[in-house]
Amino acid sequence: MTTAKDLFLIAMDPRPDRAVGQGDLSLALAGAELIDLIGAGAVTVDGDRIAPGGPPAPEDRLLGEAAAGLARQAPPERIEDWLWRRGRDLAATYQAALEEDGELTRKRSGRLSFGSERVEPADTPARRRAAARREEGEPVLTALVSVLGVDGEESGDEPGLDDEAVTTVVAAVHDAVMELEAVRQRRTIENAAFANLWRGP
Image 1 (spheres, helix red, strand yellow):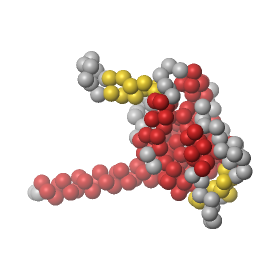
Image 2 (cartoon, rainbow, N blue to C red):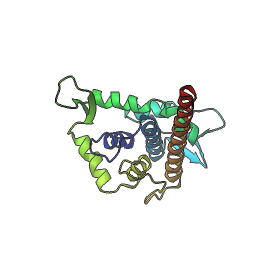
Image 3 (tube, one colour):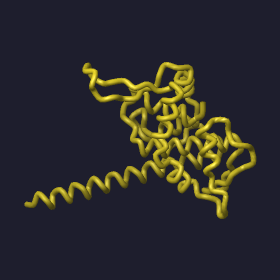
């Protein structure tokens, strides 16, 4: 399993203190992929820019797609731009892939058989490994979980990260998630103002 898949399973756990938005999760998944590609030597980081490395595409299909999607023309792509480009609808892509692999199950909420469906991680070795990484405080996963606020608190801290490139990616994910939240708040304010205009005095 990749860091992105572990992150998705943790975010889908039915017990977190708050639900994770699809946009936030998509950005964090793109960051997790980038971190795994850095670890595999498939990507190099220079300041806030990334460039493809030399090794062949990873065995994991989604990580392979991420590697294949790296911009190969000059100048190297900015990390922030990669997060927004690769992150578009990425949560839905991971959900479909994990459902296909039997890592996610659909359950109906409520007592009625026609209640709304929700997706939960299945009780599989992959889910247990993801939970173990989280419980052990594995730095990269902990940092990404923290950015998403899965434990009820958002944080820009990068706990125990000793790799400058990884730290840069986590910080970029945090900034992107905060930017997305600012856009949401602005839309909420604009929609409220528009509604008030129609209601009149």
